[in-house]
Length: 73
Image (cartoon, rainbow, N blue to C red):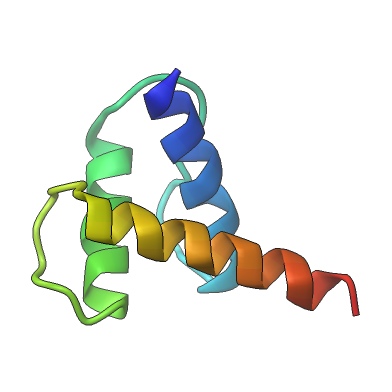
């Protein structure tokens, strides 16, 4: 379930950043998910890695919420 939630949030945030790669879906944690995490860590000016830590998840959730607020206007 956690990977599915991560992929859903990644999908929303990546669309906002016009990500050209495959957007991960479902509960599968594969190469597409890893590439997306690396890309967003670079965009967020975090240490670039495939690591999903609390700081990265908090930033993802913040971005997702900001996109939701922006789309309501």
